[in-house]
Image 1 (tube, rainbow over the protein chains, first blue to last red):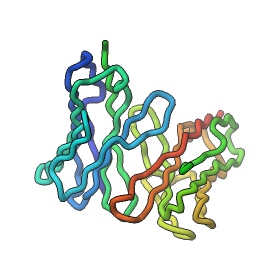
Image 2: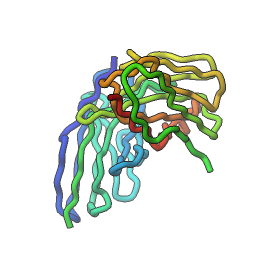
Image 3: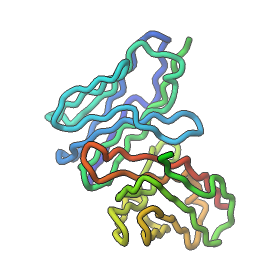
Image 4: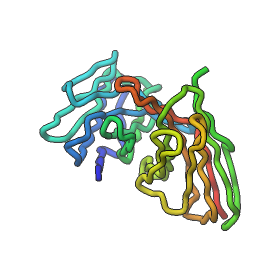
Length: 112
Length: 114
């Protein structure tokens, strides 16, 4: 079955810096890759996703890139702000199968 | 308001005492799932359901049961809870339509089994 590895487990940056979180997946059939942000004590919330027919997607300060050949995808946050501090999870699945496999999470800390 | 609800939000129980965590969604979603979240392990899928009366095991189904008798409800049943089931549980739902298949999570249920 699918296995998703996520790095780093913790990431500390200064406000205004960029942050990059990387994930690799094992199942070449996976075609949907969402990213979730989880603030302390809250539920995971989708922040961006990408499907296997595109290589990059942007939404304001957040972007995700996908390399299908290498089976890895990354989350890029530019101009980080303290409110970006949270745990970020990547995930992979095959559309229609609903078996979402998550990475182990990255705790991002943005210092003012 | 479109939402996924779970009850209870917090539960402390003892080993062996059967319990049910309810999950309900009002978005007419076909798909529903249960996850548990443990430190350092991320979110792991327990069971999922593609539609009414259709359920399947996720990655960590041992010790859990589910049912899907109605489209909106997907209860998680622990027939004989054990301390290793102490965890944070999330229910999620999504549409089956590509492009709108984002999984929406409930608020979570923190379970402690003594």
